[in-house]
Picture 1 (cartoon, rainbow, N blue to C red):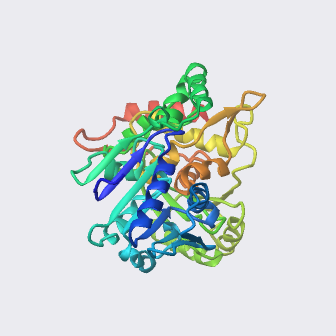
Picture 2 (picture 1 turned 45 degrees about the vertical axis):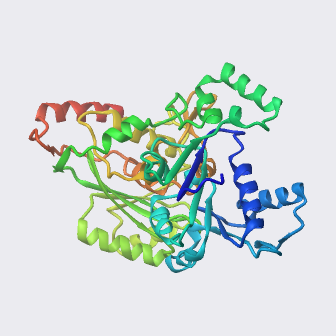
Picture 3 (picture 1 turned 180 degrees about the horizontal axis):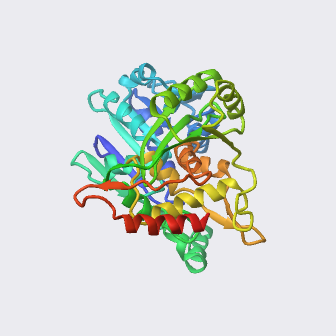
Amino acid sequence: MTQKYRIKFYYGGRAGGKSYAFADSLLFLGRQKKLLIACLREIQDSMRDSVYKLLCDRISSYGLSDYKVFEDKIENKITGTRFIFKGLREQDIQKIKSLEGVDIAWIEEAQTITSGSWKILEPTIRKDGSEIWISMNRLYENDPLWKAVAARPDKRTLVLKVNYYDNPFCPEEIKLQAERCRREHPENFGHIWLGEPLSQSGCRLISSQSVQRAFEKTIMSTTSPLVIGLDIARFGDDRTVFCFRKGRLCYKFESFEAQSNVDVANIATNIINEYKPRRIFMDIGGQGAGVFDILKDRGFGEIIRGIYFGEKAIKTDRYFNRRAEMWDKIARWLEEKPQPQLVEDDELFNELVSVDKKYDNRGRLMLENKDEIKKKLGRSPDKADALALTFAEPIYDYGIPKLYNSGSVSVEDIFKYQSRRHEDW
């Protein structure tokens, strides 16, 4: 930990001791000279979400009486070293720029950091000799920080994989738990204990391969009608998202934060007037009902449809609720021919491949609840939910996509595709 690198990127599985090693190293470095150390996460609703408690525990464990603990910071009384704690999502650009004087930035739970946060933060830590320490358990193949930093490290970047068997202080009980997982749940062992990204096992509804294929640019245009999915923010950190899909082509997302019902209704009104969609399927749980009522009063009742994610599915014998039905339509759409096309988007990728499936006692498809997904992602899957809403009801569609390099899909193929699709509904 004492070697000089611009970025130190430690990753691995459970019980590798990454966080403890970082905390101990920073505490002892802070006793040698004055440092400003920023402990960062993507979202930090309270100090409980930070590494504050871990640092306090290590101070107590080592009896480091030269450190004084405050409610929102930790300071060394001799050297003047100061630890501060921030959530990047809660900071505007000017507040992030206040980190310019930081000597060491420690990013914990880095698998949740967005590419947008990294693009602002990395050039902000600019003090001569400053370092960025990153600790993470990989979640997906294309975790933004993995792609930006660890996938192609330069000579100023140290990337080190640390697992439980590398940790000299790993208790025997933990080693026994790891071995039991290897024997009984080999499909999960790599991710939990070896720091590998989640495999696309049977528990995943949507495979990473199908999403990656859909990111390839194959469709130039299409004559299919426009369907829009509108997922309306329910809580403070959720976003209102419009998804634009024409048949096999999902070509745009528009996201908005901190909008009132009237604001969202005004945006929807402008979109209707400009793009002339065949349908807008909108989530009317929470704040959505108010937006729906405003748009209906404005005369858009023929275009808008209100959907509750928790309501009964159209096919009640196959799906636990409407949410499972719509998400399964995404999974099947991604596997059907001709190959669909999605907007290439890291957030969308992570949201789509994050959802586990299960079945109720009648054998109907269920999805894990949204709170569980939010814990994995550090946010709500707003873009994926908006895409799911575009599949809320069947739309008459005999549009023909025009493909890059190979002309148009044949009429015969379109009719084969459409007949399968309508039989499915």
